[in-house]
Image 1: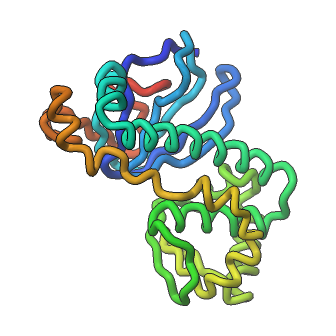
Image 2 (image 1 turned 30 degrees about the horizontal axis):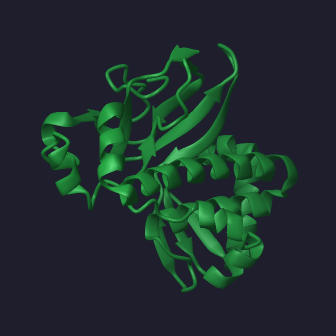
Length: 239
């Protein structure tokens, strides 16, 4: 376990995945963090067992917790968005555990792709030929859904043959959005947890300026981290 940092990390660009480390050798993948989302917004405890690993190059902006508190007081809408971000991450983690333990392979992958689509596109995939670039390998998918890469390949082939979706070379094409919703169970809890977090700092430049920040993602406050690296310079838990 590591001591929690005094700053939150806002993801401007890139993909991160969060994991929970039970001991030095075992960890469990919990969630992906996408652009516009916030990490290290956990309750105030002395130590944390979370780790964050970059799947791509990441541009992140750090904000002191004291500034976040002042911002939330100044702009209740921002405080609500931050709470929504926390609640969504927690609900997705719970859903992920239940999916891994109780759902068949096809439904697991369908729910994962639906979750990512909703969070990136901010809507449900009702159309046809909906394309999306996902910086995920077969190994990434297998680790996240708790399957072998062989099982993932077979499941993707079934989804492709059923003309539901196609995933090749990190490109997802949803061939039939309505069918994908059916296969994923179209769980209102899942889609609510996948709702956009309003990119909480994109519309709050005035509030940030009043609290001492020039812009939500000022170049002087941003840190770029290459994929696969746990950057110790970023004050997120486990980095």
